[in-house]
Length: 280
Image (tube, rainbow, N blue to C red; front, side, top):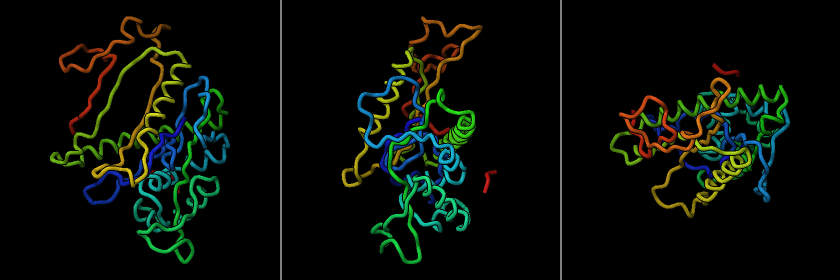
């Protein structure tokens, strides 16, 4: 897994004016966003990104995989520093629970105490402790190097994260008014390409590099910009009767015809898609 880099900022709105419940972090996003993403097996780039860290400690992975900690880490990544009380209010938890989970995240280096922002006035100390997500390019070990125990933890983390991402995507799309220009901000694409494992690894790193290209400090962000959540998912096509997909169709491009064939086209892209219990 490899975190998708990004600068935390204001997230999507909900009718109540509160940020939506943060999805469980499944893919790592440098600069303090979601935890880590599984990178395909293949040769590593000649020049690894500065600060890249592989998280192979089972205790750290288990700490991060806790559902409430995932939500808290994601919230801090997207909306910036917060106290245990503000996190509790935003996520519908109690302050005692958020305080404990923040300490556990800090124990493994995922969050840290920080000075208050100009908005909050003052500095660390006093009666309130402010926390922030620690920036970094965190990576999970590839599946071939995961122990059975590690695989159980990461599989559950991924399962929960993918489901939460889909729920949040559908929620925000439905909650965005039709007359809002951002109602057109839900592109998606499905396709297929034929790659070797080294090529897939390079493809993945190019995606991370593309995300990094659009990173910029708040001072350089143009008016009207909003934080956009990005996700990357790729996997080999399943074999049928011991055979993979037919070569002549593997690289076909089809942008989706409502009256087209019943089989899934090799490429469908929608640049402006119309709206259509956890442990304590």
